[in-house]
Length: 336
Ligand code: 13P
Image 1 (cartoon, rainbow, N blue to C red):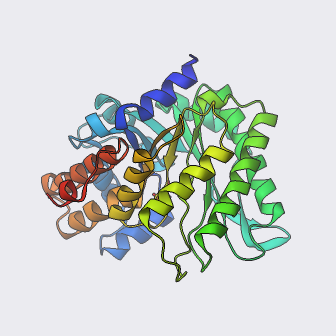
Image 2: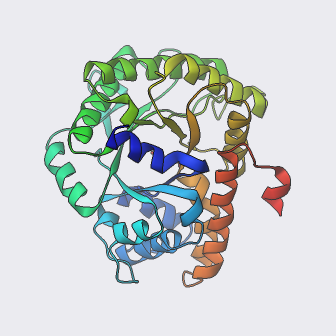
């Protein structure tokens, strides 16, 4: 087993998942302003370190994705953020793309940037304690999108990013997110997501990326958020499994889903059904942002010094997700 494969397995084994707290300052400001908390560096740190010092970090969270600001911050407990995360047994990761920009010659679509100077930035993040990274490509669905251009350009960028990350001794998370926005059907999502993922692996292989040292972070197969299609959670789980079984090479050790706008409960329930029906060799876990933080953030915003109350909510959420990553979640446990 290679060192990179070891890291990937350590992050995702035994029902552990990833806490995605890599919102850029712009996105985090929006999240905080939505709950009437001023977006200062101190408040961003306070919320995040409240989560990072929660009890459930030890048993549920294998990796935390950080943003550039956070990985350089020192917690109020006088540890650097990577030290705080490491003390609970989890591994620090870092978002290294610099965001999705308008794709030239297809202005409705986006291409993720950040390759220039990436090798040098990666070395700095490694020194700060990061052992895995994230890069997110985004794709929209409509009858003409995602275009071949968007599918090809984003796959190319994801592959070049992954190769550089592995060269630096870290595990790349490859995140091709086919957005839920739109009125498309689940079948459309299945077809487009399959095409996107297949192209990503074609490029990863061309770039000689070690697949055993790579984690895939895909969307689940869902109808568009404005679609009238009614589909059961079982159907979502089965379509998602079929897509991944057909599109992902068997060398990939683990898949960690994004929540992508699903509610906390939906994201948990769907993950549980995916694991109950898992007919692949892949570990199927989570790398949730909103579906791990939403309730905790809402509670915290009412009294930002109520650390214990915020952590209780976060602990419950992470426990539910870790049960779902093992197919052991139930409605009864959810509401207990
Ligand atoms: P969500 O789970 O909120 O979709 O965030 C995951 C993520 O890291 C998006 O890049």
